[in-house]
Each structure stands twice: as structure tokens, then as C-alpha cells.
Image (cartoon, rainbow, N blue to C red; front, side, top):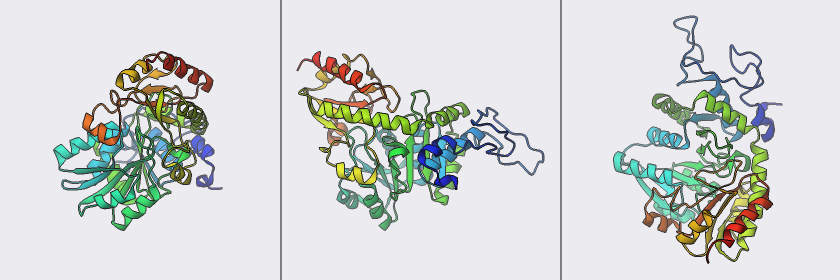
Length: 391
């Protein structure tokens, strides 16, 4: 059996860490942390595969092989952060005058990056509701080059029809990028649905333990890969060997973690949907979610992210958040511990109040990353915090 035919669980453990996985290695079961910044050569004109660790490092090489395998793509590239990966895409593939169509509900850091590119490099951005493919069609211009999606989106958990959008895009010779951070490769593979580029904040579910910052790009097209690889090297936006080791280690439990994240999230989303102090719940696994059927069709799971609107406003949201004991009030997501935050004051504070209003991010919105703790303990903590919230 070819390694590409192995199951997801097998690939998370073995791809990139085969014994003698590159010339000169020994028989390590776990890929070593290769800290050397440079590599010796026997002949002046024969440098070998590894020359300098910014260009290629054996530990990163193992991880990038695994990235590609899990997203079912030909190529994988590792980066120092998710935003480093995104900035590399903009730098490598766009030029002044080009146009991007983006989901109106995107991570605040991505929108901040877009604003910088608009202001300094002459790129224009149109943000539309990508749950409505007609809005994407209407936003296409002669200078459009790229459609930028998150599905589910951050923080409103919108789900867009990736296959339908890629079919539309390819009719116009446009590239489609999908940020797959929220579902991970375990639950969704955008490249299989037609996406040209898949991006991850590795910091989140893929690494999974809140102890490493990283990003990744996965894709099939060789020409695009070579452009991105050149910029990865020339910009030097690469992860350290130790970070690569941590991600390789964390990935081995990805399927186990994602199943527990999802199981807990479904229970808590159901609890929240029936709570008298909650106005609205956003979770793709609820049948009340407007894109529930699309999620069923294109993904094998719904993930561990929930957003909800507490009755009242910012004051009540802050009171609730500061009353929690087990949930950690912090930005980020995807770790084994449950995290909770206020998008308007935290993860999306870098965008204007008007932009948040247009995107539907209310002052009462709370975003939750459900961890792998006991769900009864998590629900108990939510309940005691609600009891302390004056509504």
C-alpha cells in the first residue's frame, strides 16, 4: 500500500518521519530537531539537498511532507505564523492594481493585513457575504485575481459553498484560497473541493497545545508552489526546527483531539441555544445554523468553535466573561484548554467599529474555543457565570 493511501490517523503519525527519511539520517522513529544553520558539502559544485536552514531544514522538511499529506495536496510549506503565510501569498502572487474578493467575516488580523496592502501597495479589496455566491459573481472585476475565504468564518462561523465558489472562480481564471484553520484537515479538505490554496494558522488545532506559533500553505499547482517557496526562502518567514518538532508531535493526536473538541462543542452549543440569557448561537453543527446542509455536504464534522450573543450588550458580555473560572479569558483557539474571548474588544479590535457592524459582529458577541475538558465541568462553569451576570 502506498503511504498516500493510508488513513488520516496513520498519516498524522508516520508521514515525514519514516526511518531514514532523508540522506544521511539514522533510523529515528521521531524526526530529530536539526538545529544546524548550515550544512557541510563534500564538493564545491555538489551542495546536496540541505544547504542552509532558511532554505530547507530536515525537521521542517518532515513537517511539510505531513502538511501536504493531511490536506491531500502535492506540496506543503511551513511558516513562522499564519499571518506570515498570508503575507507571503500577497507578496508572491499579487501586484499593484490587483483586486481581491474576500469574505466579509474574516479574522481581524487578516483584515488588518488587507488594509495595509491597500494603503501601501495599491491592492484593492472587496468584502462580500460569501454565503451568497451571487455576491461574489457581482464583485468580480477584470483586475480580480484571488477569492479569499474562511469556512467556517471567524468569528460568526459562516459556512460558504467552497465547491460552488471555486467552479465560479475558475470560469474567470481566478484563484481561490481557503483558510481551513477552524475545521483542520481532519474535518475538511478544501483542495479536494477545488480550492487552489489552503492556509492554516498552525498555532491553533494542528499544533493543538497553545505552545507554538506557526502557519502553513498547502497546494497542488507546481508553478504557484515555486513562487511561494521562493518567497518563503527570500523573506525568511520560516518556523524554527524546535517549533516544527512541536507541531509534528502535536499532530499525532489531531484526530483524537478534534473528535473531543466537536463532541464537547455540540453539547455546549445545545446548552447555550436553550439558555434564557443567550440571544443567538452560531455553531455549524446545529440544525438552526443557516448553512447546516452545506456543512454536512462538504465537511465530515463541525469543529470546536462556537460564538454566541448574550442578551444585553458589551457590559453584560464583559461581566459574564470575567465571572468564568474554568474557561480561560484569552485570544487564540484550538488548544486542549477551553478559551473564551470578546471579538469586539480582543481578536477583532484592530478593525473599525463600522467594519464590525457591517460584518455583524455585535458588542454582545462572545467567541468560545471548546477544549477537551469534561463537558459537564465546562457547562457548570458557564452556568455559574450566567448566574452572576445581571440581565
